[in-house]
Image (cartoon, rainbow, N blue to C red; front, side, top):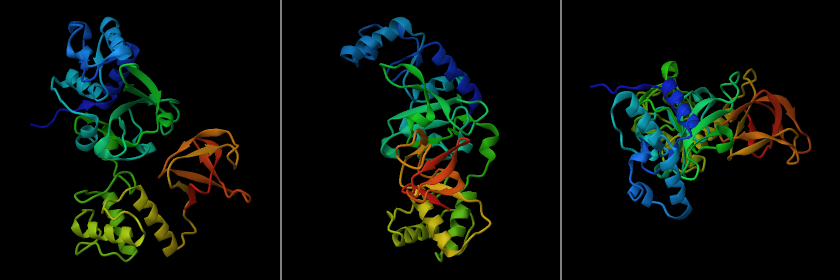
Length: 333
């Protein structure tokens, strides 16, 4: 039987309702009424000190309680009647496609999208969900998040660009995001590894072949098989990267650099790509400039045609405003 999926827009609406109700947080909860639990039950004794006092506060004052992934599990159960017992890291691993590392790309900033925190994908410890744009006229900019952040915070509203997640994904196994699911992912939108298929895989294969790497008998067929993995590993070794056979942000950056050396593209739009990690965007070409926001590895910002002679900072368009990024992090494509 096909899995019934909850409309992501409805999911986001219910997230907003949980925030407006001032719902609470209890580890392991998926939307239960905490007043039905005895005060000496495990739901509360799992905490001590100030945290236990806060847990008992939620028992007295919250209509419903959740933990971070419990928001998705519980609201899905409200809609379908089906229970899912999972954790944030399994959400990322099993529910999400497309998905990727770092800041969620603008094209995937839609209501109900998930963002995650953790050192590695296998160690994800927290998830939050996109609620609505901070500025309705700029849906590709900052978004409000709804998250069950911890027993001391409850269900709260935060902002995407200030929270700086480590991973992102559309939970397409259980939620319906509509037309965006039909959009073909582009190279760099998600991690690519053996078993992946799609237009972004074909783009990766085409780039590798242009650079002299053999992708096997079928060439650029959009199917990431053993031959493509061997080609990725060879490219990574040649460019002093971790040769894990997975095409992520660092491998994509190295591909772009290698292709730029291979040929010039005078008619291509000039972009500044953020490499080497997160960096501030400032209103002046130095570290004394006012911070306008944060750019993340893999972000591409429109170049405004200026490079400061003294500092080598690059002028870019940042959310509709002129800003500057250090040449240490911004590379002109």
